[in-house]
Structure formats: C-alpha cells, structure tokens
Amino acid sequence: MDQIEDRLADFTTDRRVLILSAAAVVIGVIGAAVAYSLVWLIAVMTNLAYYHRLSSASVSPAGSPLGYAAVLVPVVGGLIVGLMARYGSDKIRGHGIPEALEAILIGRSRIGPKVAILKPLSSAISIGTGGPFGAEGPIIMTGGAFGSLLAQFVHLSSAERKTLLVAGASAGMAAVFGTPVAAVLLAVELLLFEWKPRSFIPVAIAAATAAALRVPLLGAGPLFPVGPHAPLGVHGLVIAGVVGVLAGLGSGALTNLVYGFEDLFPKLPIHWMWWPAIGGLFVGLGGLIDPRVLGVGYETIHALLRNQVVGVALLGILIGKSLVWSIALGSGTSGGVLAPLLMMGAALGALEARYLPIGSPGLWAMVSMAAMMGGTMRSPFTAVVFTLELTHDLNVVPALLVGCIASEAVSVLLLRRSILTEKVARHGHHITREYAMDPFDICRVGEAMESNPTPLRADMRLADLAAGAAGGYQAMARVHAAPIVDGAGRLVGVITQSDILRALEEPDGDCTTVLEAGTPDPVVAYPDELMRDAVKRMLRHQIGRLPVVSRENPRQLVGFLERRNVMAARQGWYEEEYVRERVWKARRPRSRTDGSSPIA
Image 1 (cartoon, rainbow, N blue to C red):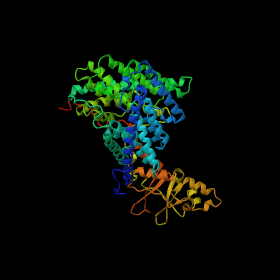
Image 2 (cartoon, rainbow, N blue to C red; image 1 turned 120 degrees about the vertical axis):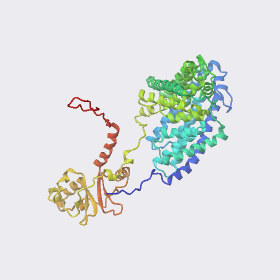
Image 3 (spheres, helix red, strand yellow; image 1 turned 180 degrees about the horizontal axis):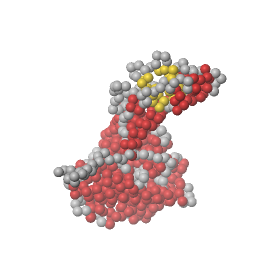
Image 4 (cartoon, one colour; image 1 turned 120 degrees about the horizontal axis):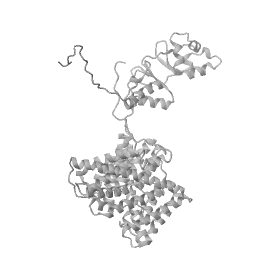
C-alpha cells in the first residue's frame, strides 16, 4: 500500500443536524416558558409563605413580618417536598444537575413526564419557603426533561436524545440568567461528554432562542450589573491566583460539608420523607439569625458585588449560608447549587479584600464567586463566561481566568470528584471528566493492520489444514482467524478457529473445505479509513477480525485486522501518555590522553 486515499473529514456530522436544530428552536421556546414559569412560581410561593398574599412580585423572605413564626415556614416546605418525593417521584430530590447526568449516562437520555412537572413545582415550594437554593439546577433538570420528552416522540438515537435533553437544559439556564454562552459552555464542560457539531449546534440554537425570549418575559440586561473595574496588572493577577486558591480550598470544604450531612441523615431512625422537614428546621433557625441566607439571594449577591455588605455581616453570610445550604441539601430536598456558590464565593472574596493591597471588595467578590463556582463544579470556562455575562465587566476577564483555573487546580488535587459527580458516584456510577482525542480517531487501518497475512485456499480440506500438510499453515494453531482466497487470489471468505473446531465435530468434517467451514463474503475494512470506523464495524457485527481490501478492487486482499492489532494501536497511545524519557541528553566531554582541554 504505497498511497492512502484521503476520504476523511474533520467532523462526522451529517444532515441530521438540521433536524436536531429545528427541534432545538422548539425546545428553546419551551425552555424559556419553563424558566419564566419557575421564576413566577418561586415568587408566588414566597409571597404566600412569608407575606400571606397572592402575588407574583419579586420579594425576599428577609422582609417578612412573621417574626419568630418564620422558623416554621421552611419546615412546612420541606414536609411538602418530602411527600411529593415519596408519593410522586423520588427523582425530584437533589441538585438537579446530577440527576440530568444520570439520565444522560445511564437512562439513555429518557426522563419521564412526571419529573418534568414535579421538579419545578417542588423546587418552587422549596425555594419559596426559604430554601437556600438556586433555580438553575431545577431548571436544568426541568428543561432537560422537556427536551427529552420531545425527543422521545421522534425516531432518534440515544445520542440524539441526549443532544435535545441538553439543549433543553441549556435553554432553561440561558433564560433564567440571560447567559446563553455560559449555558452552552456548561453543556460542553459538564453534560454533553463530547465536542461535536452534531450536538453543539442544536444546543447553541436552543440557548440563543431562550435568551432572546428572556427579554420580553423576564427583562433585558445583566442580572448583576456593576461598574467597570480597572484592569489588573501582573501584581493583581498574582493576587487573583491567591484568591482562586482560597476559593478552591473553600469549594473542597463545602463539598465535604454537604456530603457529611448527607451521610448523617440516613442514621436517623425515620423515613427519608421526613428529612427535608428536619433540614427545613435548620434553615428556619439560620434565617432567624440572618434572613439573607434564605431563598435564592440574588439581591444579596448583587449587594456583595457593589460593596454594600461589610464587616461582620460578611462572615455571617459566609458561615450561615454554608451551614443552612449544606444541611438542607444533605437532607435530600429539591434545589440548585449555583446561586448559593455565587453568594458564598462573593462573601469570601469580600472578606479577603480587607487584607489585599489593591482592588475593591466588589472586585474580589466577583473573582472569588467565579472561582468558587469553577472549582466546585469543575467548570472553569463556564464560570468565567457566566460571571462576565452576569456583570458585563470585561476588564476583569484575565483575573477571572486566573482565579478559576487556580481554584480548579486545588479542587482537582484535593478531591477525587466534584459536588455534582460525587452524587452520581454514590449511586454506583463513575464519570470521567477528561475529554481527550481517541487514538482511533487518528490512526488509520493501514497503519495498524497486518500487511502480509497468510491466506488459506478456498478448496483446502480441514483435514489437510489440521494436519499442517500444506507448508506454512502450521501457524494456524497460533492465530485466531485467517482470510480465504480462491485460485486467482481473490478474497472470498474468512475462517476462525471456532469455525474449524465446529466443522471438525461434524461426521464428515475432515472433508469439509475451508470456505464451507468459514464465512463467505466477509465484512471488510479499507486501509484509508480510521480505526474508529473499523472497530465500530467489529462491534456492530460482533466479530473480532476484518480482512482489509482495496477500495478500487474489494476482492484484492491487502491486509488483515484482528483484535491484537487494535490493542497494538492502543499501546502507542499508552506509551505517549505514561512512558517518560529524556529526549535530549547532555553529552559528557571526553578527556584527552595528553591531559589537554578538549576545548583548547
């Protein structure tokens, strides 16, 4: 094989992406409507629970006139959520994003209609009654559920259903926060487990559609607008790295705190249905001490970014929010993690600003909240763009990048899994978050195949083959398969050891020819195609070998591909990844016998 014909393209995307894109527009509209409904429901529940009025005006539990009676409001909300989880669907429990991950990886991207209804309703009740959660986790799960439901009405593959599920999740996030680019990045970094135009294009279309509809539904502009900060120099970026390291340590502490409380609740001698009510009691007590820890807390986050919270109040928000959020989340109620991470990260950054030589508390609150999100969720690029879209402050992008990368580095080294994937792992499943090029996407069949296979003649009897009468065929006992050719050397079949043993067990097996015992017209591979495609063909037909033939003449045998060749191709990747060597070695000068210097 002197020359390989180039038939390969950069991507494997075909015209079906147009079908998915058209569906993504519909999903974007649905996602925006669901986001609006969830925000409206949270406002209605908050007004009912804390002000005893029927209104959809945006209010905070912090201004409630209930006094000490407000302690019982989260308890009632937790009790209702527990009842909904037990008698409705237990899939509404939790953050939202881990459940979406499980649906993608384990449930073939299928989410039932019951979850699509109960998840936003339970989240609205939980948050509206003071639950210290964000709306992003529930909206991601709910938007994903509607995307999955739409996909289940169409003839799609599991991978295509995954695309529409993630499109719904991204649409919901883009509509709630007005952050379409961050929503797409979150899909890539956390939900899609791939970077392909087939999935990226529909997800981006759904997010853009939802963001456009957010303007008439929820208003235009950034959620937390701030004045532009002065760009930071080298000194400032070093400090941003320190802030990121501290946020990474904080993210590790929060993750351990959440799952520490989650491990405590099963030790209680009561059914898990009652756990959210117990968690709600601690939420109510925390709200009694500092009401700002209740609810989504968008107004508190904005105040932190504008330098409006100082002194002991910062410590109260950081400690109070961390405790009530961890206890409530550990109890198994319904709510998200993103908004609480933003608040806790911003409070931590504002506290650190007292000891930093440059920059305002609002600046370091912004860097720290992005770093806390990036480190805890292991999605640094999403955190950078998300913060940028929330604030519209371009000057801090370098500081955000440094802080988020530093935070993720600390988090990755400290913890095996993130706060999201730990939930999945506790259900018995493992997720690898490292996305790398598969060596089979680079290596061609012609580079891995056996170039000079020893074929068998079609008219050879098995008795002659078994006895090794024909020269060169004694090696058959050491191979798993061999190609079969006719008198003119054209490929006509393939035979394996199992074929031979099965034929020899027949009464006239010795007289059976190789072609009669083997498989005529075998599945073949081509030297110019990728190993990825050849391996897929092996799996689809449940075979372990492929004759390699010329494209111009499909009967011309040019090679043979077996499992051992596949493993050898993988071995090359292993050596690149783990075999360490020094390429350049310093040469020691040789001493002269006359004692003179080699340079002289």
